[in-house]
Amino acid sequence: MRKRTLGFVALGAAASIFLSACGGGDSTEGGSADQGAFNQGATEVVNPSDKTGGTLRYAISSDFDSTDPGDTYYGFSWNFSRYYARTLLAFTPAPAEASTELTTDLAAALPEPNEDFTEWTVQIQEGLKYEDGSEITAQDIKYGIARSNYNGGELPNGPRYFESHLKQETFNVYEVEDPLETFTAIETPDDHTLVFHLKKSFSEFPYILTQPQTTPVPVDADRGALYKENVLSSGPYKFNGKYEPGVKLDLVRNEHWDAATDPIRPALPDEITVELGVDQNEIDQRLINGEIDVDLSGIGVGPAMKSQLVTDEDAQANLDNPFSGALRYVNIHTPVIEDASCRQAIMYAADRDSLHRAWGGESGGDIATNLLPPTISGSNPESDLYPSTDNKGDLEAAQAKLEECGEDEGFSTNIAVREGRENDVATAEALQESLKRVGIELEIKTFPAEDFFAQYAGSQDYVRENDIGLSVSGWIPDWATGYGFASKITDGDAIQATGNYNMAELDDPEVNELWDQALATEDPDERADLYGQIDTLVMEQAAIMPVVFDRAMFYRSDELTNVYYTSSYAMYDFMALGVDRG
Image 1 (cartoon, rainbow, N blue to C red):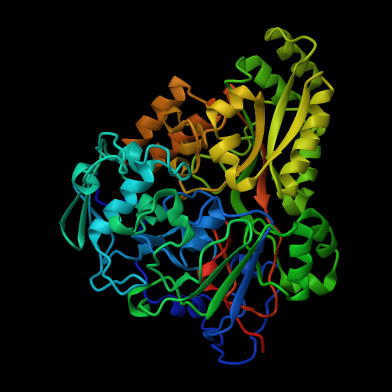
Image 2: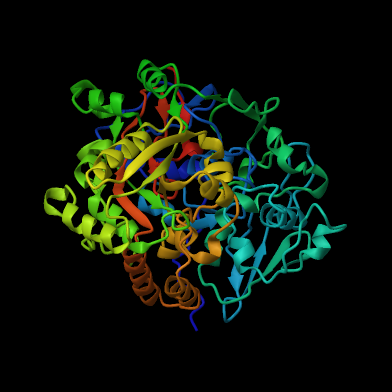
């Protein structure tokens, strides 16, 4: 059996990556380098510099789902949390597809598996410290994983990969006397070694070790749901006072962070500020005016500003419009719309052209007719089970499906969207108009983005009690395989009472069996074939309506340094960024 199937890469210091990625570039201690050209940041580092200092300013129209690394699943939260939360492994700090390769962070080397990939051993670096000067240990990483996956629902956000794969009976870290002793699936034979024991073979397991849930948390420091107020930093920055939900989060340098141990964070700014709950149009205007540096959401400028920028010749050199690797889609909740024929009626009646325009047309991405993005092996973007002329929908087919499910006159339900997500709202409005044509009435319900999954569209009880038949969502790969992309949104084993990301609650035996087969399949090509089969079955069940394979329109200011798009987070790499105010 082969020991390696993933193409892991280990890298040196982060600062050298930025310059080499530009063919050497110009390292500048003062003054800005060439700001590049349209879409240059999609494949190259723009304005490389090793200049330190200054304040990097973020803003967002919503809020973090949580600043607690063990309780988050938003892509921007994962990207940003790395300022203060180091993980066992990381993705390569380089532009575009190179960023999907693995490297080390807290780990001293990449993990070593046993022969059947059911046991993985990781050594961590010695001498790593928290912001208070105390040493980071393997036991702290073990506890960080335990609290994020076994907490009785107190930390509802975040994936449950560890819970799914570790050979561990369910327990609650907050209810047992000694959580480290109870948590037997991870051994720590010494302060710098972790041994993971899995239920079954899983050759892609190292990718899970990039996730914020591997951030070290000492048992004595944990405050449960209140830990998010002031996370104990293991990274180059620490909280400057408490995180204020809906208001702000400020970071300052952590003097106990050692750059020599960190291959992914150059830590250029002296301070980092985040304004929360700012109107999207205000954010976009302040980006252009130079009053803020980065939109934290990582989904690009809003529709109004995009329409201005695409026709502004002077702005082209400051714009990036890459394919993100993300799918924007609509969940069709199977517990509410139970009959597959009714769900298929929705698929047929959808006006894909209007949905595409809701995302900005060509600059917003390509119309999607299948689940897996083209960047994922196993994807078949030519597949289309619900074809129509000019992407306007097939109303006759939709009516026939309504008759099959006994809803000849149509039916009514609610569609959930996130506050502050203009494209999501526009998607819901476009679908609302589409479905009216066959008598399906949608009422749009808007919910706070930070609680969307934990309390509303991702809560089984709320969905049922409030007739949430559909919800607008988006997904980027946790890592760049079919499993890393789609398992948490289509596998029945991923369904949770709250913090649910399989929001359609698809629990199809055939799909579930194929996911189990994929876990036990070592050959990447064979796994890709299984992922393609899953894609087709999900579309047949009409549990997810693909809308677009996303392109975001990012604006990078002239003062922002080391700017590049990372495929691993589907936005700019926040860790690379610096500022040069000239």
